[in-house]
Every structure is written in C-alpha cells, then in structure tokens.
Length: 146
Image (cartoon, rainbow, N blue to C red; front, side, top):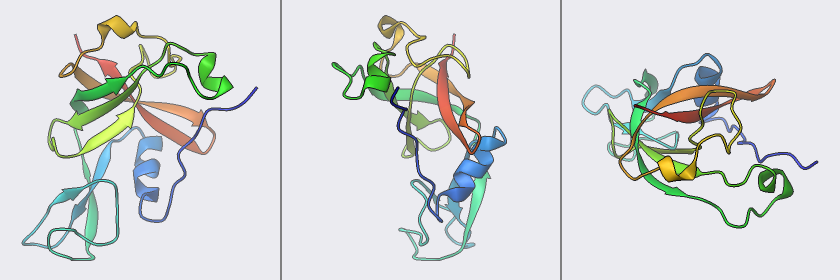
C-alpha cells in the first residue's frame, strides 16, 4: 500500500515539528525588539524588518477554517482509501494572517475521513490536535469546536 505524503522538515522549520511532537503549536516570530512580527512558513529573515533574530511563540491552537477542499478523485492510492476526506486552510486566532494546512478529524488518531464533509464550513471554529504519523513526525490536525 502506498503511504501518505509526509512533510519534510528543513532547518528553518525543524523547531515547528519539534514543538508539534510535544503537543505545542508554535509559530516563528521576529525577536528584534522593535518588530516581533509572527511569520509562517518559517524562514531565516524577518520580511518586515530584515532581522535574523527569531523565537518560537506558543499559540492557543484555536483558529477557524479559512478555506477547504474535498479532493475528487484522490490522486494517490493511499488517499483514495480514505475518501471522502478534507484538506483545510486554518487561520490562527492570534494571527489571522498566518494560515496552516491540515485536515479536520474527529480525534487526534482518527482517519482523514472521520468527519462528515457536510459539517465543514468557512469560518467554522477549530482547535489543533497533534497526530503522530511516524516515529519521527507529528502533524497538526484540527477538531471542529462545538
């Protein structure tokens, strides 16, 4: 059976994945005293002030669905077995300009098809959960808030 596509951590983004493995949603921020801008995806230089100083700030894990799609048909066999599933873009509550891609599921270890697509809507509140998908990788997924 084919496997699901997994993110690949690069040097700039490695801390994101390390925090996710600990069940923390953190976003890179400029550490320059006069800036402090949050940024995602992670990168070495602040796009606002060009500082190379950075830190990782904890987020609440709350957000809302900014966009979503139900892929038809799935392009890879490993995904076809889980159809119909969703792919969502979530804007973070603390920083709506930061959007993360993931899946809405019924629980951290639930399959990608565990939420009825009819329950999804733009603006729906969600919260982050963390799903280990391999011994080396934990991904952020989303639960619908009631």
